Length: 157
Image (cartoon, rainbow, N blue to C red; front, side):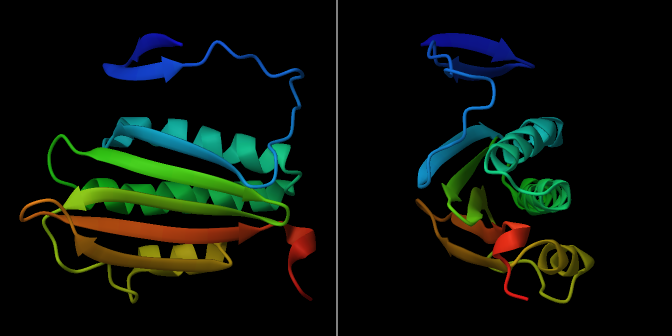
């Protein structure tokens, strides 16, 4: 493993290379990204979401929806996070869907409004979405988002 400095953020890079450029993630494979809660890092999270969805044979529309949903959820977390916070995102690839969860420390006890434009965007782009606040260490709180995007051919018609 090597340490790389990307835009002032330390990233751990594995020396393992995939066997092919189109290697598919295994069902149940989890990917976790821990990154500074800053808008400049949203492109990294969109790229991870798109890559995992592409390798899982999602349609182009579903890939685009997942990227936009990840961007919207993470933007909300970043805007509500405490200074110098980390944003922790997890992607779980399953045979017919990708489950995404993200969290960041916040001072707010209230999750984002389900009447907001951002919430409407998330519900339009995903098959399931939820957000809530849980107690964190000390007097802090943790805001969490949880969403599911199904492969288009896995959606019941």
